[in-house]
Image (cartoon, rainbow, N blue to C red):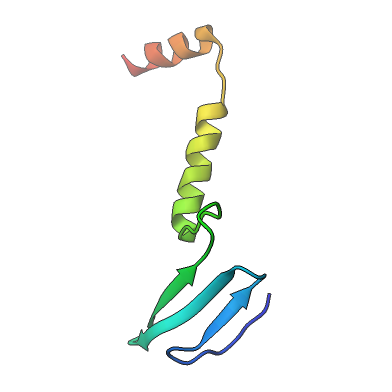
Length: 75
């Protein structure tokens, strides 16, 4: 992991086409501007975790008997 210090209006570049600029930094919060090609998703980590959990849940397969048994347990 690389750790950098940047001041407001300073930026860093990742690769040739991703630029991150510090817009504001106060009260323990930082606002960033991220410039990246449209084909590169830029997501907050909590959204990425939720998306991965949803994808994993959608890929799980259950046998019809298992589903019926679960429904029977709900009664």
